[in-house]
Image (tube, rainbow, N blue to C red; front, top):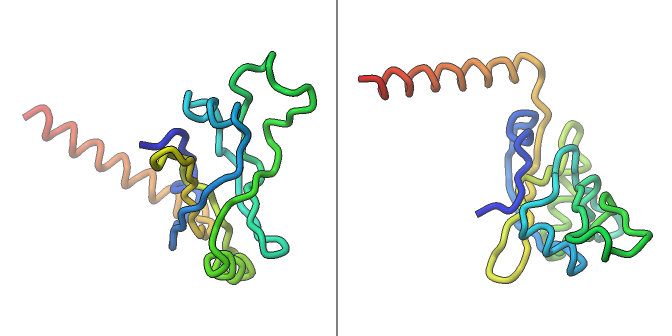
Length: 147
């Protein structure tokens, strides 16, 4: 079960290959995520110097009064991947038009994991097509439910 999800990821991007990564967090950030607080809107991942970082994800402290005074909820967080996965992500990131997008943050045992997807940005007409398909599916479900 996902703790937080990037609801716009599949709407704004065509997600290809996905990866599972650990994430380096403070204790009060872990508590906050387990409570369901946080947002992945506008977040992305980058590979720099053989390491992967999550940029733009907002994770507020569990108790704001007990957090350090200089705490930044949108700080860059290190993602934990194997060297092979980092190399693959680096190659994908260098291709034109591809972005590493966080899809969800979830529990796996006691660990907090992030699902990363290689996303290719959708054009406006692709988004319209997605909306039409979603509306058609809703209509079909409604008519089947009423019978």
